Image (cartoon, rainbow, N blue to C red; front, side):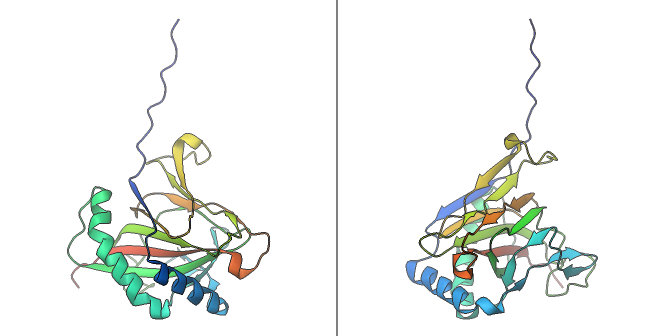
Length: 219
């Protein structure tokens, strides 16, 4: 009696997980800054028709691009970690790197559907029709208030080339644990699972810093 052969699954994209990524002082300062600037967050956008636009069917969360006094220490920490992160993912980063940072806030029902982080213009020129200084590595740093006031919001990373996003064999979930950094290749398909936040208060949201390392190309 013969049995059908099991399908051969494509590999999972490489990833790197680091807990306690920021020192306690920087971690607390980042949380304090985020909560103090709640009224400055705006609806997050996606790249559509050569411009960044709001599309809540694809992405429904808040963002703040200004990290204020936290920008330099977090930038330095991320750039210092870059060589080791790239090596962990099995790639070599070319000399020079441009780093994009934004704080995101996910409240009750917030999500970001499956997408990749490539094909988005760089150098603050959203009208540019082709990607400039391509994103090579994406990293997400998670932080939140204690006790945790939300559930869900996992980062879901899909196998290469898969279209069946519901089959558990085709993805891996990463929990948004406090003070955790998750890094992956920017062309890996991924999503943010829906968040549940019963209080619906900003201070209980799922917070993260989105980090994108771009290869700095000659002008």
